[in-house]
Image (cartoon, rainbow, N blue to C red; front, side, top):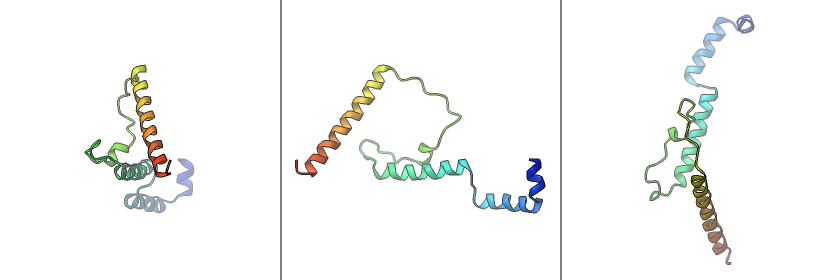
Length: 101
C-alpha cells in the first residue's frame, strides 16, 4: 500500500475510482461475463419440455458463501453416469443417421 501511495497521486486514484464506477473490472465482473455467456448457451440449447424455465445469469454465478452440497452416494453417481451414457448413445445414433449409416 505504501508503494501505491508513493507512486499514484490522489488525483489519479480518484480517477481510477470514478472509472471503476462506470466500468467495473476484476474477478467478480469476469464471473458475471462468463455467467452471461453460459446462460445464453444454455438457453439456446435448452429443451423447453425438460427445462421449462429459462436459465438465468444467476444460475451460473459462483456461490462462494453457499452451504456445501452433501456428498453423492454411489447409487447417485451410477445414475448420473447412466444418464450421460444414454445421452451419448442418442448423439451417436443421430450422427450415424445423418452420416447415412
